[in-house]
Length: 388
Image (cartoon, rainbow, N blue to C red; front, side, top):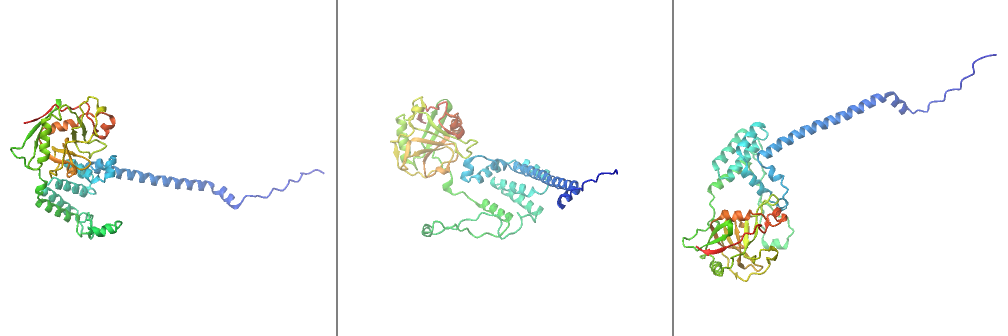
């Protein structure tokens, strides 16, 4: 008898419900994941371009106000000395009001109050009281609800430190400093108080450069091919310094000595003062033979009380604080930080531009060029110091 052979029974399925569900809906799941990833990429892409536009706008704001120069500085001395405020003031002084006004017209009202505020501070720093007050009034009228104009119990302000009794401070040196109470008000109102204080401020007499008597002794310092500098001495307030200086002139002490150090600002150190020094034994043409450590033997002990205005002639201080009248500094810039350390006894009457030119000469090494402090190269020789 013929027939078909029986087929073996199919093996039972071993797939789990999850695997069956995956096989059935895999395409939909992949589509969902793709949509989610695409949505995330789109979201962050839009955020990126939005933030980029905001950054560009505020970078333009900083550039218009010249604030980017201070904030972007890589100067370690700026960061370590906490002198950012000084740098910002310097940038503000150079800001172009026309450029800033143009920026406010191009970028809407969001940044206008801040640009106006910077313009007002610029006017204040330049003692243009009426202009500063006019700008502040304009901000108040145009943006009365801006935080610059609103009264607050604690507006942005610098709070002075309460001075402790010295004995208490010594007994508890780790005590946190206590600040004076916050002053209620608005920034615009406080700004007006600054304007009023500026209008009535009178510089104390001891901060003014002293008058030079008509009969004050004058001396001409010939710095070789660089030119001549004429200094006037003040024996009325510095008799010991002036007498020693005149004695050294009679000995031709400085003749044929070189300027042994100049200092000036650089991109790495924007706060280095411009000044020059001479007096060490630098008569050798080989700078490696110069002894810049030998103690002075031409010392006087006298406090003159004169300040380092531009052109100040000051004696170097030795380790005991006495004045080395044979080693002299000429300050090209205002250098009030040295008041009380060096003793000023004269000022440049003519030739300040020559002193500045000497400070701008090339220096002996790349390291000195970068730091803005070192020996001039080519050498700047003192030909003579003579009485006028």
